[in-house]
Length: 171
Image (tube, rainbow, N blue to C red; front, top):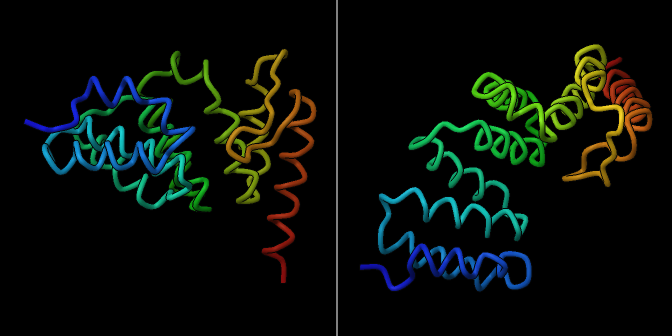
């Protein structure tokens, strides 16, 4: 029986923002006590992510996905990959997220994150295709390093990023 329970991890979820090291210790205790339980990896993923340890977060998310293939898990893994600069891999996961639940996925920030990846790879047309589908009232503060602003500002930034990426590939 683990010393730390799932209920305790959920009750202390706020610690991942205020005291992520403490939350990580709780999650690691849960994982050590029950390494076959994907819940522990889910909670530890959040702790690693809060600490900016994206490679470790990614490894735990892979373990969660091996048990359950929900669209949000693919989007979260895409985010981790994007933050690591692994844009092509992130695109694969964003596409899996959309395929798993097109309705659920389109209501979040997946299109913005996928547009950001495509732009950073120099794929302006693909990036703009996602931007077109952003709601007219779209606005973001630049979540996870994605372009910020309203729809027009995001489109302008996507174009700039794509041009910059293409310029880096030119001899």
